[in-house]
Image (cartoon, rainbow, N blue to C red):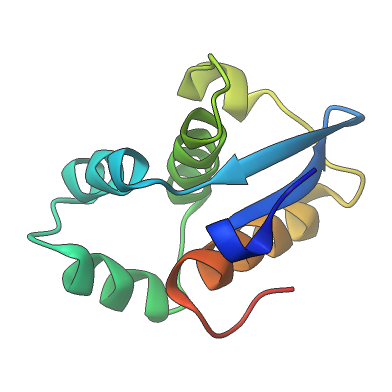
Length: 105
């Protein structure tokens, strides 16, 4: 079960519940992937509200790996949610909200 106080969320992917968490290591992975200099730059980029599908794959993959899953971005790209693209957007929003505060469930 996810612990929101630790920045964890739970999301249904491929018909199963998964815990996601953007740990410090996961955030470092995203800084590298997005070419962000620091956490402030990363948060500002996400705060723009414009994320591509590839961005969502990277964020979800980092969140799954941060929570302990052994998964690569190619596997994440093949996953499904009960609500399609809107479901992925909601999961990303909730995860970013749990990590940086503000928005999200």
